[in-house]
Length: 382
Ligand code: NAD
Ligand code: USQ
Image (cartoon, rainbow, N blue to C red; front, side, top):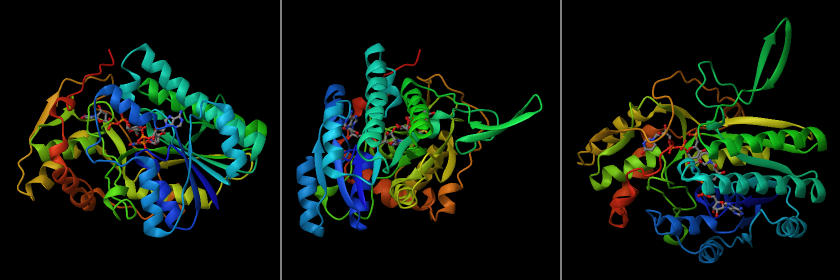
């Protein structure tokens, strides 16, 4: 099957492109490398030294004999997107190609606008390209668990059945996202759902939780294939940051009380979940939603686990509760369903097993690359 991986130079996209290629899918990457530019804009860098995209792809070819195609361009440009679809004729598009940092989207008006235009226009262009060029192609779109926010009831997978004034319907689950970035995902979901209804497209929205870890079978094959690992206050995510902070002796940055609960998953499960969605496509006209995470933790629990795992390596990590730069509930109910990917055959990696090999050991190996000035959060929601 021909699979186009949009955003294939990024953290989830790179690991997924290699994973699918290794399993015999014909893969091509679309990326405009803007993420590398955003790092330059912010003066930050990934902990792990990532090679230029062409070197990465050449090494993959040398090691495995498999070729991954490359289309460099911006999916906001419809003529570029159209050319890619004409030339590659994808049967499945996995769309990771967005601005994905909540803090980046909250820097100021310009960054909020840029995030929403980039994400919403890019996704709309992909929907139009599917409709006009490859109408049978399955869109696998990366959404986020953050679309739901933290309601005081159980979170279902995309839809909820409601009885109101004696009538009953199954409707999209209510959305209460927590940043302009998370809102861009909600807007995308609405646009994709609409396109499935009016044009009969097939789509799966993968509402992914926070991803952790850096090692997958393929990215671990060679230093040139290494994946990115962000630790800075803008693009770094909670658990990845805590491990790197522990490795360099920086107190772990728990925001506020630390009762914020989220869904989490190992990057090795991200790639597998995407394959499960690709291999089991939605029907024509169907808009499926899968909640893509394997375990729920609050940030205090994560920090405690990192302190404990660090002790086993002789590292004494400490926790610091910082004033919360975000506006979010710090103590709340959170119980999200996640059975659809398990039903398709996902066998999760659990954090208790992954913390050392996939994270802390990497953090220790590359600790000399950490810029301490980039650790504390600088972006405020207020
Ligand atoms: P990333 O920033 O590492 O990768 C995104 C890639 O998309 C980058 O290589 C970037 O250059 C590319 N891109 C962005 N805008 C583009 C455009 N207009 N045209 C072409 N390419 C463009 O992000 P990631 O962590 O790999 O996240 C990938 C997707 O998964 C995002 O949609 C994100 O919202 C979602 N997601 C990520 C996480 C996580 O914890 N990392 C969790 C849930 C969901
Ligand atoms: N947090 C801390 N300390 C830190 C960093 C974060 O306590 O040093 C807290 C945040 O306040 C928040 C929680 O940890 O309550 C998660 O924050 P995060 O930065 O790890 O993740 P988030 O901003 O939600 O975004 C990340 C990805 C995004 C994806 C989302 C999935 O960057 O692309 O959509 O995770 S989810 O959280 O399920 O919406």
